[in-house]
Image (cartoon, rainbow, N blue to C red):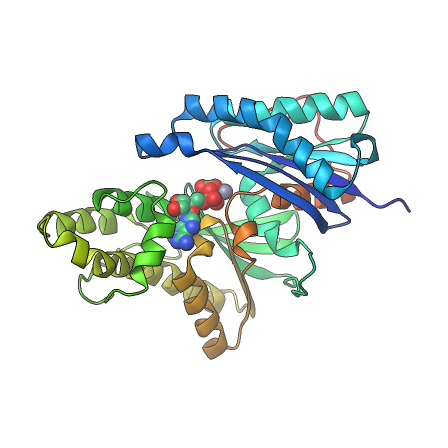
Length: 334
Ligand code: KG4
Ligand code: ZN
């Protein structure tokens, strides 16, 4: 059988990305970020759409070139249908649909959050065993915080979610009040390494079951930062970052342990942008060791927004014969 070569295209937020997978094995992975949002302290939807327009052709071209293939070698094209910024999604979606039509190959409509879970299945030169089903996935990004019970590649059940802000948002908003540039998550991660996480204890949100909340932590943290004088801020930054990170991770790890016990699971995965956080990775691995779980965390490049995970989800959709129809238009909410 001919190898399945899938081009993935991602444009849901502020990264324009394209990747090629050959039967689930990575051949190229190109991401163009958008620095234009930094001056605004957050993603500006209109600027994101324009930057996607500028980047989409060179990014797809680079992905094909790095994979060493021509467009006519492709078996199918996968694009992010949603959720995301509608103007941003439309750029990748329209491009993917036109290209698939011109080549006469199938189009695959991918759910961005499912793709974050399927990032575990991307294969490359490093040997990483893929999770076996069923497993729990903690999907943590800038817009979502989900506990997902994964029964199969295309069979997922959300068993817990945030009731307000996402974990990534809590990192980013906390970073913003400290005057750190957007997106603040990676900067908080870096500064927290030398800080004392017990210096500014934050409340643990009272939420029932497996759901989560981060708005209380955000508000409490804003109050803490307001009480630190401008002179003291530079020396307090590592302690503030470590305390914020601790408050967020405590919620995530507590819920993971509860969910693993309730559903009697032995394997857990973590993906999405926040899973690039070094403390979260280390703590989840240590917790897994104590509890006897198999822990899966993809390399950071597959955790933050990328097109390899979109192509991976496309691979499973193609295998299942679930091709996009003309009605599968990009959607802000899915
Ligand atoms: O998955 P992603 O790239 O985009 C969305 O789909 O939202 O996630 C972006 C989020 C941002 O909130 C960013 O601050 C956070 O992931 N993030 C981190 C780290 N790297 C990215 N948060 C904490 N520590 C990091 N190292
Ligand atoms: Zn994402």
